[in-house]
Image (cartoon, rainbow, N blue to C red; front, top):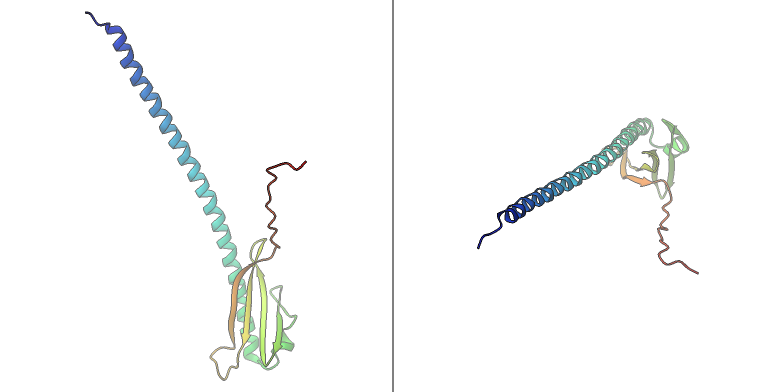
Length: 158
């Protein structure tokens, strides 16, 4: 019995070609997935860097305002409420409240479009403490109201 050599050669060529096509498709798919992942990582790191830059600018501005408040407290810490309430430093309005012998100074420095750096200072007695104030809050807060309505109409109501 003679075997048909043409048929076995054709099957061998076809299977290796199919294997090569499959490998090329796999490599192409992995290359596209890697490119997509790199693009999303790049856009995330760009947004993160912008957010951090805005935060550090706001923090630097808040530190400068804090320095000016420190100078004002060094001059005369007795009449703090009358001198600082409603005053603006670097176009940032200060709020000064006093109750129960404690004076609290607060201000907000904008950090981007939707956030602000909230600073709250408790004025201390300089004879008992090293500093004129104690930082009670130094936090990033949202300035926009959150709307949690993310409902999806999956089933149409008739």
